[in-house]
Length: 391
Ligand SMILES: Cc1ncc(COP(=O)(O)O)c(C=O)c1O
Image (tube, rainbow, N blue to C red; front, side):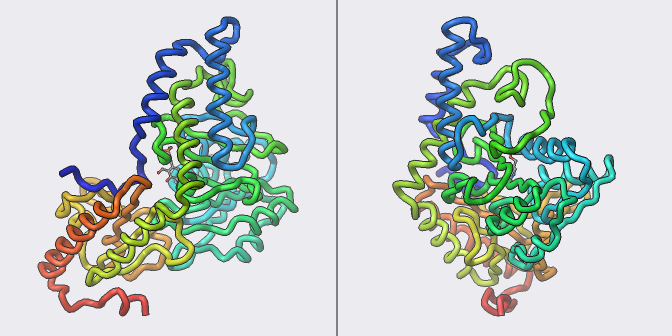
């Protein structure tokens, strides 16, 4: 039996329908969609328009506000450098738990260009205090960047009041919506944001394509220079088959949210409850403010990589990365105040819309058995239970 895939936060496998649309577009429009001087180019451009329309609908935007990029990493870098380049303001505000594709360009602005960076702290559950954010923002800020849902522990931020405050001061708010799109309804207008960024392969679309949404009143300096820019902003021959696939994936994601709004929630809750009932489990994701589809749990005293290695029945992720001799914690696990013996034991399991309840049960049975064996081996049979930890 194939392992149960519980790593949708890292990548959502492409859907057959999306692959068909991708293949069809690659064969049918073997042209440059930017070249409108022949009929096939114009037909390719029309297919691109349709893809942009479908992608925009998923986030409550209009098509001409969307520019295609190579993925959320490029979109994030673009917003951050682009917003910094267009102003004399020299302050950036972001959060300690942002994705590295936000934290790294922000760090580069500080180190190479002397920007003053405020890295907002979060609580044990990855939550921000909106009032503290509002107090930190003044009219000297070039950009505020706060993700909608966290990629490792799923924490959602309430952006509307922050966005409203930013707007009154004329400060742009960027939000990385990569982990929220397709899991929960997202409406960029309600968020009061200026920029939003996301990626196709997280919603079962093709790899190598993402999007940047820009409020119609905002400007953005192009990051790349060259010919025939998409939306006048991003040059280079557009990846039409990927854009068509992204459009289909967006349309299907919107359909799932409309027709089965609790589908992903059901499996997420089953997984979450099952994991928490394993002896020695400590919940890392927040209970109420988490996006559906991301569950993070720790088994203090047991190494997360060992758990995953000893559980071939599932594919999941840990909150740490190891190189030759060192283990590095992710910024998210660093930022939340977990007990010491839990920090190397965080496991993120992310079911998708097509994960079945039976698969969840298989995963839980396998995890329960592995954790029991490793805890016994580590002499932890009498260690604290989840409830004792939370108390
Ligand atoms: C929150 C978040 N932002 C950005 C990215 C980067 O996305 P991409 O793989 O499209 O570059 C990821 C990928 O994991 C993510 O989770």
